[in-house]
Amino acid sequence: MATSFSYSGFSSAAIHAGRRPDPSYAHITPIYANSTYVFDTAEQGMRRFSGEEKGYIYGRWGNPTITEAEERIAALEGFGLVDETGAPLQLKAILHASGMAAISTLFIGNLKAGDKVLTHYSLYGGTHELLESILPGLGVEVVIADLRDIATAQQAIEADSHIKMLYLETPANPTIQCVDIEALTDLAQTYQRIVAVDNTFATPYLQQPFMYGVDYVVHSTTKFLNGHGTAIGGILIGRNVEHMSNRLTKVHRLLGGNSNAFDAYLLNLGLNTLEVRMQRHCHNAMEVAAFLENHPAIGKVNYLGLFSHPDHELAARQMRHPGAMLSFEMKDGLEAGKRFINRLQMCVRAVSLGTCDTLLCHPASMTHAGVPKEKREAYGITDGLIRMSVGIENIQDILRDLDQALGN
Ligand SMILES: Cc1ncc(COP(=O)(O)O)c(C=O)c1O
Image 1 (cartoon, rainbow, N blue to C red):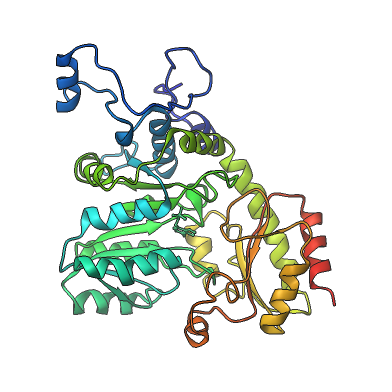
Image 2 (image 1 turned 60 degrees about the vertical axis):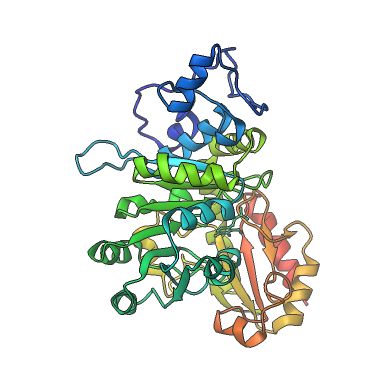
């Protein structure tokens, strides 16, 4: 139950933060499946609308199941962090219908025609398309630069006073590249620019961007936070609680990308086990990476825990563990990639990530089949590249399945 108890462990916060006594004494916060809320009197309705009295009004604006998910995730992103005065860092989160809805609120709520977003290569495809083909219609442009190089980032900011936001995704798809959150946030603060980080691949268990002073974190909660592949969802978390409570809450409500009680309930269940799941995901991923690195059919393995990954040291600095996502190249290209994927018996052929089961996809024949080969290769998506979200099955079965699928 929500108390003033300060949790010293991540799992304790993941399980208890945001929970409130239920009027019916239900142990687990129920699914509030109703669209509207009752006022005792007209005066009470007026007080709720004016904000003088706290209370739920209408389902698109929130409900208790959603509030619990928001408060728990805010507690995890701020876990153990303090503000400028040394007090525990207060963050505000807004749950959305999807990661894309949360990212849309972030952009539309903070940018206006004439503004630009500075970002890097290798973002999630949907975010890239939103920036490249939807926002320009609203007068917001994107500048893409290699933000792994801080001097390049600085030149880009100095060259264009319209850049208002730095948008980072780290680690990113599908080569698991990282950017330096601390260095880029220091730079953005020098030039008074906003910084937002997509923390989906890492989760707050592995990486806490607010530690470096970023303004926003977004997640596709569809992935590790839910953890079971049972609901699409997204969350936007902000450091400026007043701005989140006013402007961004209004934008979220009016764009209509609200979540719902059932999906929030599933997310709350998933959050209970985030730490233990992540520990097992990460342990398994390390073993899988070591296995693949020594396999004769495999060329390059992109895993942050391997010394061969160019961002190995950066990840060791800004992440608690290199994580559970990796990608690797089949030496024999497209046909070998398809054959391998088709032979899997336990691991699952699917896009998405962060579920209990191991998921593999072949970007060149699936998610990126529509992208011309030259462009794919420029982004590091070679024909033989396979992306893998390592699950929490028993490691010997994951390795046995990979081994038999790789065999001749
Ligand atoms: C890193 C990342 N961010 C955002 C999204 C979008 O999330 P959703 O599919 O929940 O809208 C995805 C989806 O795969 C993702 O991988």
